[in-house]
Image 1 (cartoon, rainbow, N blue to C red):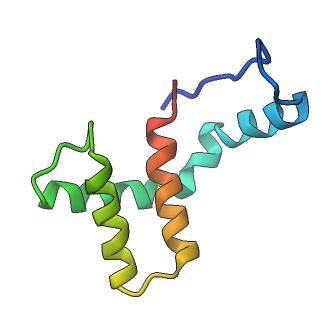
Image 2: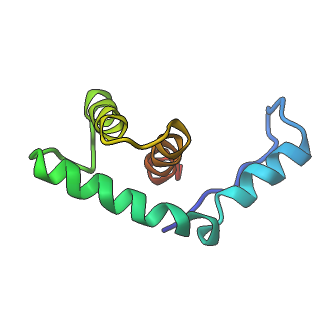
Length: 90
């Protein structure tokens, strides 16, 4: 999966912050998200949803189901980050 490089053009972010964000987007740092993304894909497909363009309501339903299944808020945040990271490649 490709990742983008963030530049400082017209940015109010410091170089340090940009470096941290860029490092977090490296493919090696996305590996922990792979299982969470796969779980979301399986769940979405079981609902007949398009995983390539999921609606906000679909994502929120998924996160709510995780909560109802007993996952902690911190675990749910990781799932949300995994979904976000998948689509945040531009």
